[in-house]
Image (cartoon, rainbow, N blue to C red; front, side, top):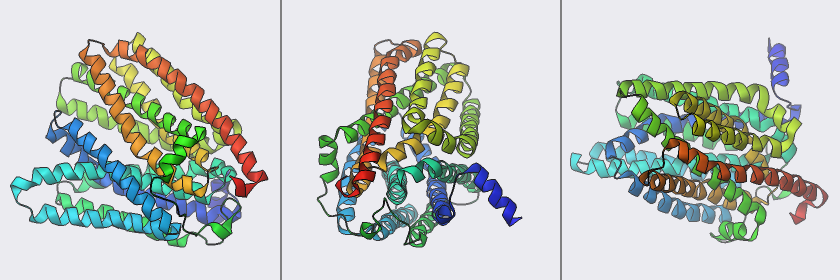
Length: 431
């Protein structure tokens, strides 16, 4: 039985014997991080809905400001500690926050609960990006480019399964326990994540330089931002995130527009969104298991990375021609599944060729602050066009040139990654 399971695993993922432990730990690590987040995500979404549309822009602005402060704090910790120390500390900081929120929910009077709820909304919106970017920073630091192409797809499956388990836990318990209990469940998941770091093999080589893997990185708290400003490659990665998040927000607003007018009943809309999520998660797991690793190996990073922008190009064109809910639903499912199953693993491979400082400092800024900045750009630009009378069809056509730019940028990043990988192999200490 054990032998047959190993045979099945080797058919699904091209893993070498010396990589098995690290791969499975990465799988479990990713699983518990996303399971914990998805346990509390419905609480955040309910807070956003109950706060009213007029308060949401201000709450997202608070998220953006908090994200900048959090990046400075994270960079300061990274500069002074080894990765095996600061990664568990980061997750235990989140755990401490959750315990504090749990206690405040129990002791604060009713008239102060709305402010606490909005504060929790902001905290979760910051936490979710940091929790995943810290995980992926560790993965890109631990695995080489070649290993990432083979193994990141399978490791991503762990996150997808965690994203399925989290909502199931919340759905089953929401009518049986208080809201604070979900915060404690999330905290328990994060403690497992912190423990995972301890069990990664200490002799697992990191980019050919195991002797430097546990040294503090040094530098100042703004070093990640200054490196981004000086590096065309890092600027390209930041622009990639801005284009992705902006167009994602446009697609989300189009979804809100079409569902509002084409589905009148609130319960029916909720069921429609649930079916979309289920379709996305199911398709994502299927692609991650059977295609992601193979596509990264066969096509390379650049061509794999460009698949989602190309899909978005045709998707916006289709909505421009036929702005109906069925077309948008197909587009959203395909786009979101491609994001989780293909774009995320391929994008993480792009970071494997960076210096260790940039993997944690610059990557953290790109994956968190730039991500939320893209949300703001997408939200305000779509809202401005909508206020000036542009309908769903018109906004789709306007999005097409930006998606075309995104396609070109993806190919450039892929080519640049290959060049940097070769440079690293020839002179690993100079990169």
